[in-house]
Amino acid sequence: MAKTIKKVKPVKKSVKKQVKKSVQKKNIKKQVVNIGFKPDKKIFSLDIALLDKLQNELFEAIAAKPSTMDFEEIRLYIDNVYMTMNKCATIAKDVKNSLLKKDFDEPITETYNSPA
Image 1 (tube, rainbow, N blue to C red):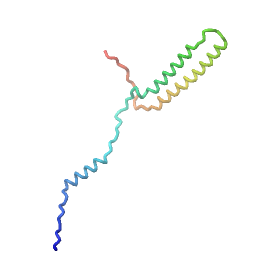
Image 2 (cartoon, one colour):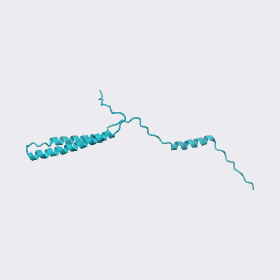
Image 3 (tube, rainbow, N blue to C red):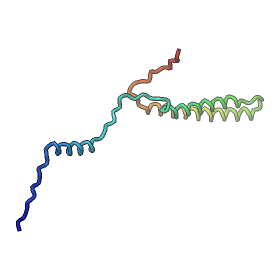
Image 4 (cartoon, rainbow, N blue to C red):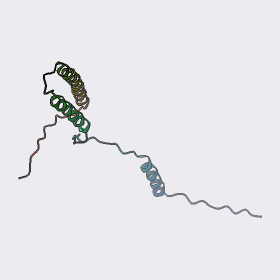
């Protein structure tokens, strides 16, 4: 019984390179490149909402002024105005702090240019 030995063909170099390239391509991760940060309206939506709330609170406090010169009504009005002013000062401070936390590389100098 004679054993037949099968000869294994050597793998070509070009096939090895293709296999290595396909393996390398799978492991490549894309890097996120920050080209330039341009803020838009969505970034400031919370700040705008807080400032709208502040404006509404102040308008309501002004509109609630009593028409009569009753001492008790004026005292309640003054107390409400003090509480409203305190709340508005807190909201304004929160908006200021949130704007300071947003670190922009360049200052926003865009202006609205209406179409002709």
